[in-house]
Image 1 (cartoon, one colour):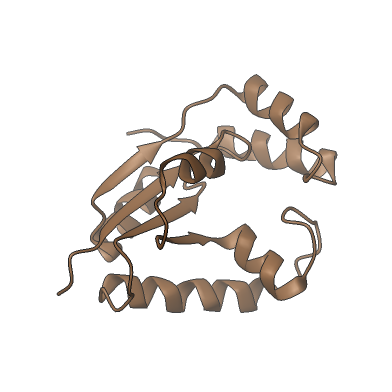
Image 2 (cartoon, one colour; image 1 turned 60 degrees about the vertical axis):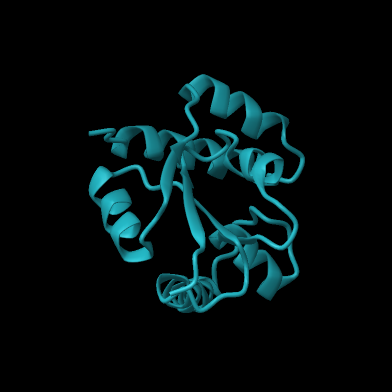
Length: 142
């Protein structure tokens, strides 16, 4: 099996997960992010509310997860960007991908709301605030 480090970067929407990955990734690394997969197959903004292709995006992500779990990808590092508010979801993905590290991007609900409201890529602000609120209701650290 090829040595590939897998980092799962998790936290609330608008907590700074993507910013963290952009800062720490290296040239040639792979990023698995459902929002970016949806963006690539729709050619629309990253956080659009239109989810008619969600099932396709989830299938693509599942395939990439399978390749990653087998280390059948040509890169040094894989960065998984995901919300994962429930510990059991994080544990399951960590085990499946044989992750090197889980990285929690901590931010308060107010910080996430402020970031979402100030982010021009996030078009539907009401939906973004709902997603953030839902994440904090579901969040379980341990």
